[in-house]
Length: 192
Image 1 (cartoon, rainbow, N blue to C red):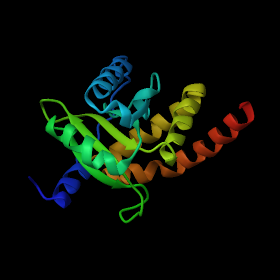
Image 2: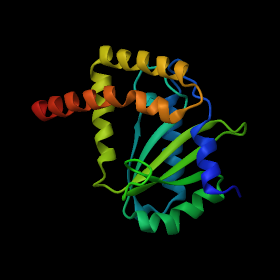
Image 3: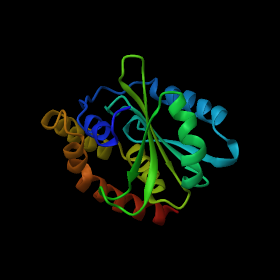
C-alpha cells in the first residue's frame, strides 16, 4: 500500500472535470445510501444526505456524488467502519476540518468505478459538526437558481484555470461559498 502522503498528493492532483447536470445523480445517491445503510452497523449511522453540486438540479458539477453521513462516534468509525469500507475498496482519509493541521478530523472516503474514476465522496461526521450547515448552502442554491448559475460559472472557470489542482480549485470557491452561507443562514433564520 502507498504511503499516506503519496495517496494524498495523488488525490489532490487528479483532474477536475465539470460536466453538465446528470438527472441520474439523485438515483446514484439513493443507491449508495441504500448500500451504506445495509453494510454499515445501523446503531452507528444516523442521517445520510446528498449535498454538493450534484444535489442541485440543473447545475454542472464534477460527476462525484457528495454524501454526508452522520456517525455516532468518529473513534468508533475508525475501528468499525473504516475496515468494512476499505475491504470494499473505498479509499479512506482522516481529514482535518480546517487546514492541514486542524485539531478536529473527520472520516472521508472516495469510491471509484472500475476505471478508477471517483464516483462518490463520503464525509462521515458526528451530528454536532459544522458540515451539516452545508445543507443550507445546497437548499439556498436550489431555492435561488440565479445564485446557483453564478456558482456554476465560477466552478467552470476555476476548473479551467486549475485542472489538476484541487486545492486551488477549492480555495477559489471559498469567498463565494462564505457569501452564500451568510445569506442562507439569514434567509432560513428569517423564514424559520
